[in-house]
Image (cartoon, rainbow, N blue to C red; front, side, top):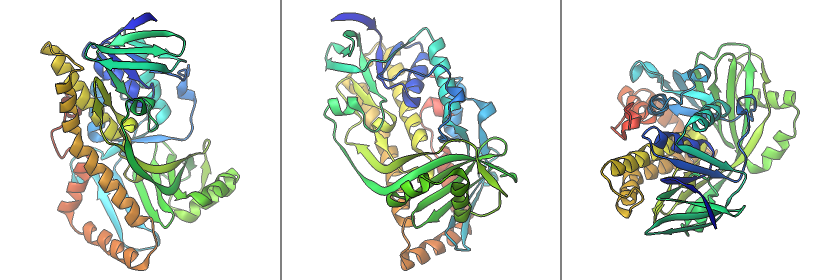
Length: 403
């Protein structure tokens, strides 16, 4: 095998999580090689599939610290209004009850990826190898040795899996997963609307699944419509005008007339959690470690917390002259993420099952619960701070500090 690359860390996956991991390590001068079987698009800022990402307050601080925050494309979320179908009871979150900062921001994935990709390509510490997957990978006490599908290869001190929910690296390491399908598929699109959204995010729970209208910059909003699998093909075959009509049927006319402003996409919804997020010279981040329902919009934020925690451990060990891929550091990563991952997965899973049905006693109980919580300002503030990520200290990057 011809060794063509040596770096301290090799990252499998050049999506948002993989690129964010590489740039985070680069901020502390740690060299990485990013590998992906798919080529990176030359200019992704002009390519949109309708997908968006909710960024919490602490995640924004992290991205700002790393120079990755595309502020000009981010829409603040100032209020969140939660309703349950036709019920008159509701739950309203106002960002002013938790401070002077927005509860989060919404941004199209293409702008995040364009910024991440630009930063990675401009770094001297990051090497991007795309178009060839990993065909073989060995991990032992001497380090990580990998071979690509074109016969080339390299070495590193450790490997990080950021290759998504169907992670090849996780599977090749023999790490098992648990999870289940929700029997729902998310349909995603961007709409242009007539009336201002006032930076209010709406989440309406319907029998088929949650229906979210999320504010984007200007007169645009993102739709994340979770629906029973059987109905999705019918909806996706509708023309744009008919599809917009179905959107209005499930929401209301508070935004005036609407029209689709881009393509539609869909993906099945499930919960998947890896039984372990670390192994011999290996760590998993993002969807490779956990995949959840988008009901709370926290999936990428959870992945960024993985990245912030892992990067801090790697950097601290390197400064002390310790092996960055050693078992002690990886055990620390495992311990540091266990509670956060388990808590958020349990919360989103519970909310999904609670609200994705139309059983009368359950519907009455949850409607009363929404109305009750709405009259408890301290409890609402606690929920907001948890969603914003300000409830605890967390890694340095999430507090706006450099590694």
